[in-house]
Length: 305
Length: 293
Image (tube, rainbow over all chains, first blue to last red; front, side, top):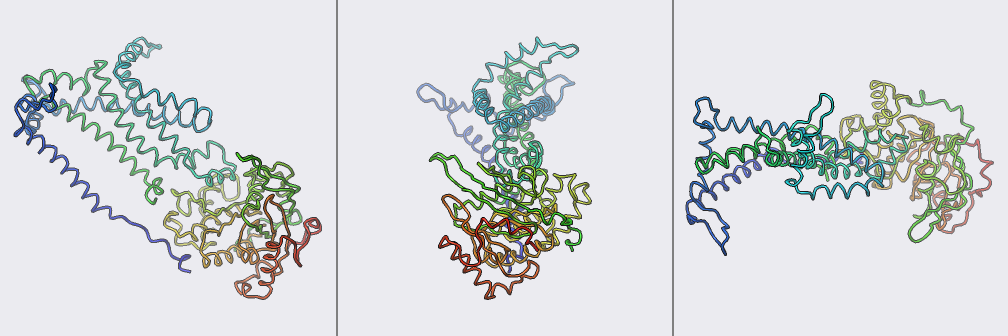
């Protein structure tokens, strides 16, 4: 009767060592990229590699490919020669924070809209077949095309004391990219409970909303977390691109364009905001990973199957 | 310990379940499937009745009709004198399936507290403290004391099923519906849990409708065994078990001559499709009311 008294042995993966190994691999990947960059810069032809009239690999000049250490050193130097100028890294960090804030607003709006749509689609099958194609179609519209439209429509909105701000256009566009994975992931997650669980809730005479709270939302967490991560990355990309195409000041998107224009005189400077954009994406994805740790008890099924 | 505070059985004379001339057809792509045909059955309060038969005989469908998870095409299902739907809304029954159906993100305690949480106006549901103490009581009852804070994936199949049973009886229902709850377990665990179930049934005084395809299981547990046959599903025979009162039945009965006789009676009825000695025709059911312990 051992089966009755003994719990199943827990399959406990060796978390600690595998995490260290993943960290080592991550650092090694970055070093490899740096090595390839510098090796090509050192050994590659000065004019780049041209095939059938198209340059497939860049020139190796300091103008086109600054040394990695030059980029890093440049980060510590002031933005301009003015005495009051901030160091480049600070300027980039401040701009990244502005963009992060806008992207976060877009992300939250995207989550609300995405989960709202998923709830409607889960509740009424008709809504699923009516709405889902539009949700998918919405993502085929090129961002560059409708960003200026959003801005010009937004600038005409004025309700009482509320006036549409330019950053809201950017947040709206970010949310437009963010809602899609949330809607699709949440719908799958809300539909994921087994028949036995839904019938159990039915036998408890639980209402639709109670079933949502006690069964469908918790069951949706393993589907929702990757969707939220994707949404975070999308919101950052959406915010950066929208900043560029609407010409919004203060964010990292604007900085990328501005410093790229100065690249002929200061090639390493242009890479600053790019590193900033990468860091932005990592912070966004990392916050979602943190959310995953907080919600880990809802991911047990994920861990065991 | 629970028998003392279980619901008084004033309504003992009322039937727990009355199934009258029930038909059930399912529309499938290949046409209509006649799952149940003219089924009538009465389960007295406190009585343990097993439904047995080959797959496709509609025994699970019949249980689902009682639970109001499906509705009959014709005929009526009443639970404690109420329509099945009302009985479900009133939480007159507890249910357990072949799969335990535990929520993986809730601990043993959390799973058992779920029905109590959902029915704040029910017994033991009012506040967190009373839910907790009821859950602790149930965890002791099914012998999982040390595992209260474990998650389902840390338990064996038998332990999970015991949690499911504890959850089913959490609100002290007068009727327990069980659809092959031990079907996926090994023989050792199965026999152990059968004895546990008998003990729990005796302690709570609840009527049990138990679906199984194991003859010894049906014989060991039941006051009556309902033998069903397929295509269309109907009641072939209802066989009285004479193995003594629920609370007196012990593991030793499995080796008793009477036990083997009952097993033979059920087996013959299943195989021949005709009622052997000891059975009573379904139409005499009315006379059987009030026979419960």
